[in-house]
Length: 264
Image (tube, rainbow, N blue to C red):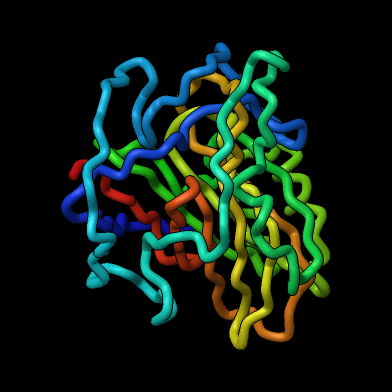
């Protein structure tokens, strides 16, 4: 078992506001209580019980790189999605669900080339001694890790979810597992992967946050477990998650918990 340290990245000169917390969970999610439902998005990394109004300010999009652990040279911790995203508003006039695709952030994201994969999501952190442990004073948190052999299943603390079962049933001779954790906010906002590219030394996974119009009001971490076709080499991995139409987070597997500081 390993205990992680915290890597913190500050966004200079701005408060990055985006609707990352909350939404009614898609059918594929499992495990954990949901809390009540609401139709108003809280700010990212903010407990809905203590939500305060914030105003976004202009930014020069500069992100410090001195604390980045292992990101490829062409990636910043926070960047702009390299594809067009059409902003989609919730319209409750025609539907009680808000009439918006919860995966609209992923719609125009390329699905190929990709290794084959399956995924399950759950509330909570899953691991006993690594990953997200508790919310920071301010900001979003991410953690990603690879499970490459059967013994890695022992790293799980929670063995009751569909996400755990997907990992535990893996044939590690032909497949491997990627676990992505995000926090903190509604358990209905989860990381969803669209493709997993094979790289020279591992994988690069691409996905987005789900953004339904109705979401639960709990305040928790979210975990996605992905079982994927094992590539020829699997020494490292990168995960790129689009979190709103103008922002994407990038994290390297096993670089410890990363905090995107939004305190300004």
